[in-house]
Image 1: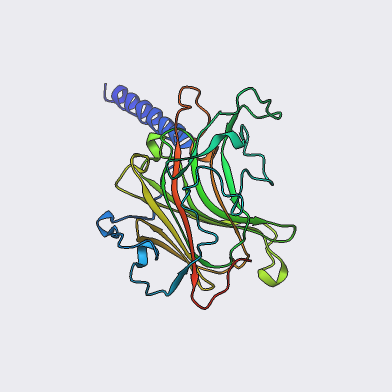
Image 2 (image 1 turned 90 degrees about the horizontal axis):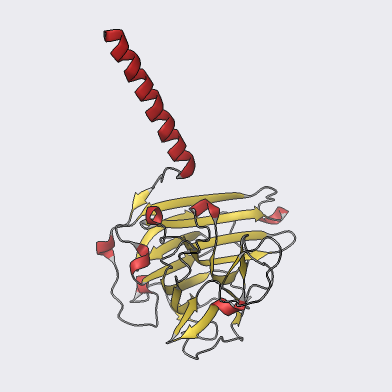
Length: 296
């Protein structure tokens, strides 16, 4: 009898382990490196300086020429490309200009507003993208945003793809519209390739960090910030410093991007029952140090 119960126990244990392994293949473990203390949220006193530095200890100078409050009701084509001129989109989602509008002092990103326009092979849905016409080398970059409550990634990031040099800084890359991602705060820095005098990188590497934030990110507006210097890269949310990385390779002038997209790594794939989500951006502001000269 004991042998029978032992055998049943082994079978149940084996089945449970297999089920856990199968689940891990579907939804990878979170591997949070830390949590964000939201009690440290900064209070906004003025718009002249970054939220994390309202007394301007960093001696920041607002670059009004490249910042955008999105108040004109249409895209400012002095600042932005109305789509991404270099990238069609991550399949199955194609970037289409119809998915970005400017309403009530915000840039609003939606999906599948392309009407009867025919899509290229391999694409079934559309999303929105705007890219800065200017490139920046170092500075402070900030945007107040409400992420999509739908299975799409909302993005605020910087990159520059050239023949010999391709780096990227992901300030906000989150898909909180999927319930298992709603408390995830992601940040990433990539090097895809770099010339000999910039590290001689031939194969892509990234330094990814995931933090737990005790609020559901899709339920309200939050302020994302990036402080990027020759020595370090700092990531902020609502004025709270949550990550600092040594700047070993990120010395390439980069463009600023806002978009919504599909991304299988987040489980963010099109769901035809959830096409009404919206990604809102209230403003984009950029600062440089007083003695710097940006606008590369």
